[in-house]
Length: 333
Image 1 (cartoon, rainbow, N blue to C red):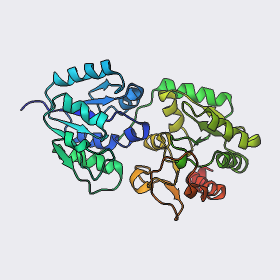
Image 2 (cartoon, one colour):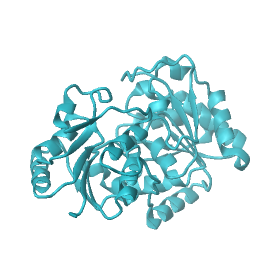
Image 3 (cartoon, rainbow, N blue to C red):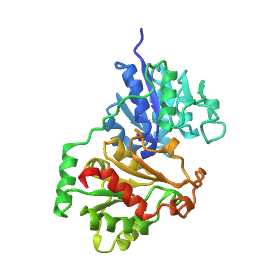
Image 4 (tube, rainbow, N blue to C red):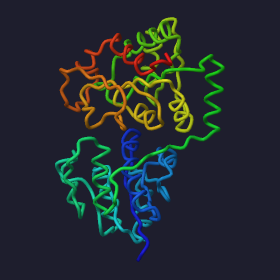
């Protein structure tokens, strides 16, 4: 029997890759000796590597024509059992199609948002589950896998752990709560002034300092949180992937909206308080689900990409979020 070889396509982004790990773990557990080649954006190679699920990782930037051509040549040069497009976009579906992979598995039109993409698949899966991680698992099952999803353990380099530990100790933060106020769309982000007020409560009443995590282009967010934090003086952190993973894994709790750092921290074993508004936690919430999720009962699922916090997020008070953090910390508070 020929060796099984799977092409996994999930180019980005952070939270979406985290929600793909369980499905690829199901593939790996079902076919332990198979080759799994993962296509992802260069920015996420270190993250994908931390899962130790892929035999090889091929970086591809869909906006770099030369890079795309090189990857297509590599795809055409291999024998594939199947390609699995866990992303469901034209830019991801096109790669195995133009690469000549005979069996191409993807979502049906009922699941993905870009019109027409399923025409590029030979097998289209109409999902019956709700959470995106479980939907990804349904694609895995279509390969003939015995398991839809599997256990995921992300590896964090000891050098990164030591670096972060030293940086925080120098600031007097041996225990800390991570606040993640960003997340791409402002409409799914809790207001920065409330993050600042939350920081004050955590520092003043629980005696735990906060670390504000932020990414490229979010400098104004962290400045606003710090301004609203008064004498709580939160630390700001914008480390690269390895140190970020170390920071999140060591947190007492992570507070954030539907954002990549929140999902990554939970995948690393940290406790989380997730603040949801226009996105549906039943589909996009923490996975595994044993976390605290706050969402107004009046919230409507729209996935609208507005430039201001959604009204449903404004309904979440600082008091309510602080109580959730205290509950998450439990006896360690």
